[in-house]
Each structure stands twice: as C-alpha cells, then as structure tokens.
Image (cartoon, rainbow, N blue to C red; front, side, top):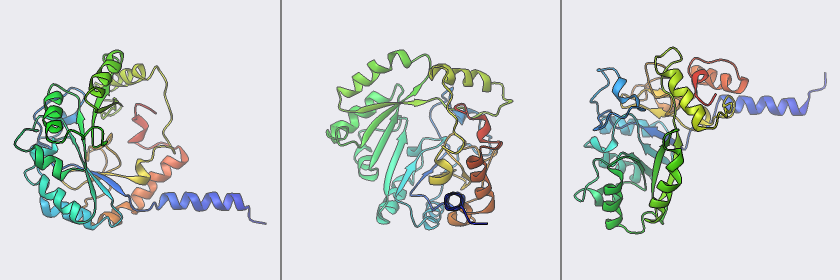
Length: 287
C-alpha cells in the first residue's frame, strides 16, 4: 500500500500537538486572598482549605525552573495577586531570567505608596473593571502618563447582558484617558449539574447573541499555556482553574515539563483534536 503523504503529514501534526512544545506563557496564581466577593467569580465557593493561601517564593522559582521556554508570566487567579507579600520579589526573579510579567488586578490594592513598585515590577497591567478601577488608573497614570498609550495598561470589562449596551460608553470614557478597554466574555466555572450552571450559560448565550462556537480542536489553551494554582496544581486554563475538578500534577513536586508531556495531558489534548467528550471542556459555555 502506497503511503498517503497528506495523511502521513496530518498524523505527524496530530502527534506533534499531543506532545506539544513547552509553553511560552503560563498563568500563575500567587494567592487566593481577595478583598472582593464578585458573584461571577469562584472565589466565594472555593474550599476552606484553599482560602487565604500564598504561593511561596521558592515554589515560584521551582515552577520557572521547569519551563525553560517561558517568555511571560501572568499573575492572576482566584485571589488578588498584590495580596501576596512576595509578589514583587517574584517579578524580580522573573525579570532576572529575561521574562516579561503581567498583572491582572482588581485595583483595590493599588496606592500612591506602591504605584512605582507596581510599574517597576510588571511589564503589563490589566485592571478588572469595578469601583476601584478609576482611582487605580489615575494613580498609575500620574506616575507614568504614557502607560496607556504605550500599551502597558488596559482595562477588562466582564461582558454580560446587563452591561453590553453601555460597553461603548465605558470604552469611550477610558479612551479619553488613553487606556484600551476590552470586553471579556463571561465564563462558567461550575459543573453541568450545579445550581447556577444553566442560568450562567443562558447569560453567556444571550451576551453572544445566541451564537455558540465549538471549541474542540480550536481552543489553544491545552497546546500553548496552562494555569498553575497557588498550591502548584496544573490545570488546563483560567476557565477551568479549580484543582478539585482537574489537575495534571503538582509543579512543586514534579517539573512542569514532565507534567506537560505526561500521558494524562496528551490524552486530554487528543480529546480536543478528536472532538470527543471530556468531563471538563464539555461544559464550557461557548461549546
């Protein structure tokens, strides 16, 4: 039988995807401490054993040691990153390794006292829109007026049916400050049998005009990035960051590169490429 070169090429591509190159960017959760209890966030539902925890500096270094390809670290998760007292030290370590750093913050802990340290530590800053956003932006811009026009500062607004109508006005208000504002679609972190699942899924569909796009085989998270909790658990993405639902291993105990190309992770990628069921992604609201 003469080999089909197209089929051979596709099989090689699929094998390459299953054993994906190490990521250039990961999202790391420095802490689970937070000042807010937003209704669309899982912070209020995390187990008591996970609450109030900080990632240690040595553990952070252990993660970086396991990802030699890394170019950027994003500080984000179910807690406010600035609540970790060692977060600036972590950024210094990342910079010493030639990495970029990004902060996703609610702005509650931005002050005139720490503004310079924040700007020095983080290459990019994303503020989640809430009542503290405007004061935080004013403080950061007073320290560095070109922050927005340089593309280092942005604002994200959670897109829901309630605020989509006024989103253009919100974006215009920030544009006058030279700051880009983007809408982030509401994700669903609850399982299919959870009490809030259907209500939130309906909200996502309404916000998207009822359009549902299939993600299997198209979502890039399993092949290009990962979320690492403050306890070191490696999960597939920021929409599925709950280690009690899925974890591929602990990056404090096992080098990340070994977890990334483990059989469990490769099997997870195969489910994406084949479009078959997997217990985590099947309930994605955009699926």
